Picture (cartoon, rainbow, N blue to C red):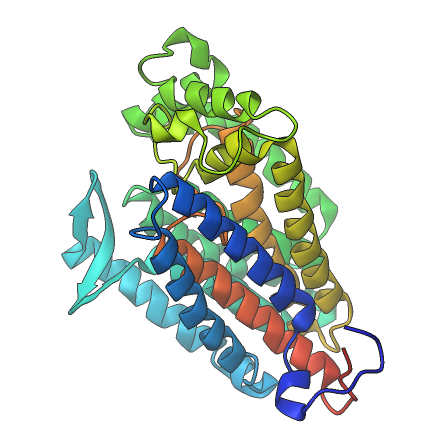
Length: 372
């Protein structure tokens, strides 16, 4: 849209800079899911578009929330989600060897997904209330550390290593931007290096350890634990520059590629659309993430800035981890590709992040003339 073109007030308040590329990405994802289903809108593409429509409305409603309301609701929201995580341990539904879900009537809820934006909201509120002179004291690390450790411990018990890492990543980015001393992060890195072998042998489950060894050498068991990543790399590589053509992917259609509609949807796309399709996906993600960082940069206060950067980091973790996973650059941890993979939990979490960023964007422009 041309600069200086005025829109009616309700439309002008929408963050078109992210809504337009987001719609393009979701539509492209629906096309890939259509192909993954053998040329049918059901069961993947239609539900994917429906969920996006519902959660887009939710995000637009979130964008209207006032700053003070969001600030004061930070810890109640965190507490409610933490309580839901406790309920998962007590009465949660078990599926695929994991206990991650709550059955609330017709709704199946995965509270660990809600904790990803909730921890960012809580930490942003905490550091906003912390006097700048205390950033280098224990109050800047111990309470935030406890806020992160409680949900991480509960999620790790489910077990869900990928979500645990996502919570840790979002929280760590907020801590970094809040201005914690660099020596603390260096110390944390050293502690992590020491803890990795301990966690590998005494904390991780057998299947999680297998994922790590498979990542290091997937060809050692190409028909067993290394099958997923081997087939994914075959699908991506066989796409070449322009791909085999829409609906012509053999890896997914002949069922060589596991989970072609969820975790490995990028491989499904790359086989049919090639390098050009992959670059398009990366470009759209770059636009969305850059917009999120610009929202954080333009924030008028500490709370808004930390909230925006933390939510942007959460989306980045999703996208970056999935892309590295399907290309064999990271272990398979079951993290879907935002806005393209089929799945309600992933769509919900990432659209909450988008809604939160729209909310901060509205605060940044409050009282100003919105033009697109």
